Length: 199
Length: 199
DNA sequence: GTCTATATGGCGATAGAC
DNA sequence: GTCTATCGCCATATAGAC
Image (cartoon, rainbow over all chains, first blue to last red; front, side):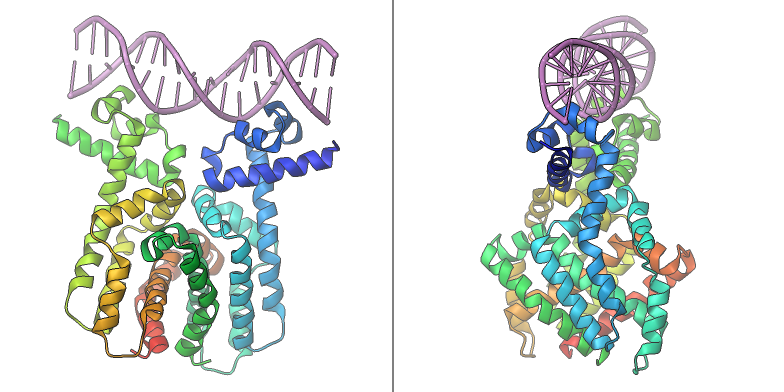
């Protein structure tokens, strides 16, 4: 098998294991088994566990972020931006529901990975806030916009990150009810924000 | 020193270490050092690492939950309940800001600890939702209340859990700005919810 | 590139003297 | 109750043949 193919199989296997076990809980043996190779080969392609984790982490972030950044740059109303961003988040989480919990978990482990990634991709919240403040016509100031952004992130991300508990406690682990709930949320989040900020 | 005192010192040390490193990342040696004893003593008071972690986890939960439960049982309007619960959460997080991240982290490790704790303390969301639906006078149905509860939890918990990233990205790690932001949030969350649901 | 075998170190846990 | 010393295991990582 070619090196590139093997490397990809390792990255996929590593992603699956890190996702469930976290960095400390993951075992190189389990990653090797899942990739169908032996431990020595892991270290041939990725010298250390740390290096392997970093590659996995950045690959996941690259799935996640470009969508959001692109939306923010479009020249549309704040109401439309919110609509597109909420849809983007929720559609993305439908497919990759494990990512919010993964990021929150490893954030406490290495908070700087995440912020360094964001900065290296040009994310600059103070600038985003300033632009939004100038763009729109209502009387929101910078402080209101800070809260607006955090509110949208909270409403989109938390329910997915906490889904194991919410699903069990509220819906007694019913897949059907949970799916219905998540499908409803796109519209619910938009209505909450529009009503709250009169957009 | 008396056994009870030593045990308490171990629990405090263990809490601090588990909080930062998580279950898998925590080291019994580090806990012992922080408690000012040696490793053998840890196993004298708590037979295994797992047993020690469980005691720490339940102690933390006991700080956290009785407040919320008591509020839900009071005979007041839904608007007043929301006000008290948001205040309780945010006041609590002011002192114990590490708890949301800790719970979310160990939730993925052992989702059942958390739900079992909730159930053993009489938390029963379907019943809470039913009671709220019958209580109040507006036209909210059960589905609306499910989302209302998740929305409040999201707005209160997520910003605290994600604080390392938010603080760095939005406020460039300024303690003053972050404190101001958190102080504002109590009122912001209530206004968002009241406006969104016309309460 | 791929394998087996092994090095090396750190971990949780225990034995046993005091 | 408290200590020192150590066991036994399992983790990451490497050496070296093919």
